[in-house]
Image (cartoon, rainbow, N blue to C red; front, side, top):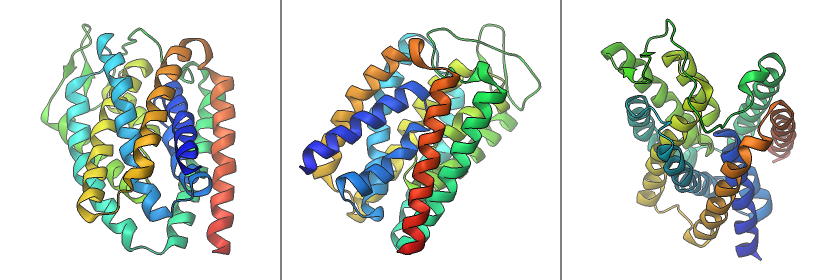
Length: 274
């Protein structure tokens, strides 16, 4: 029963991750806790490892379309991979109620922002497309007309700092951080949403693996759940990427935001009653 539950939840996470490029992973921890039956401390590293391995599939597909901006991904990923194990170590030492309540607040913020953006910026709600859209602007980093990043020291510093914060958040709550990575990449580099999503998937790989390695060193990674969860996630990711061009849009974003808010309320209730 645990095997089937792990596969099914993996499919759900992979599908949502493929459709949104980030944000889908925030449902992984509650599903692992309430459907598979893991403790919060065990669910966090499984979520990170699964999101990382699932994101590999999406990254390879995006790379074939030449969408990821690799210098930006590298700087962001370096900070994230360093901070994720620190977050894992902190999560293992914190009270379970704090983790549930903290996750609830995070999910509520993410769901609310996602809903707001789908209403106020519907052009950004379609998260995955097969073409790059470049916008030059006045951010810390800029893309040239050919899509190459003007990679300066200030640009690298800003991206690495953002990666540190995202990695710490990911390690604490088991979220990939794509809901942070995508808007940060768009704001800092002025890249379009489709390139930002593709670059975010590459960053998720590094952050997730960094957290998983930290959990592996600490001996808190449950392999019996991780492997079927990853298998389901890879299948869901392939389906999500294939369906994204037809289904990703404002309506989908609002439905997904509503699901995240409901999960936040459930986690908050469980945290308060723990």
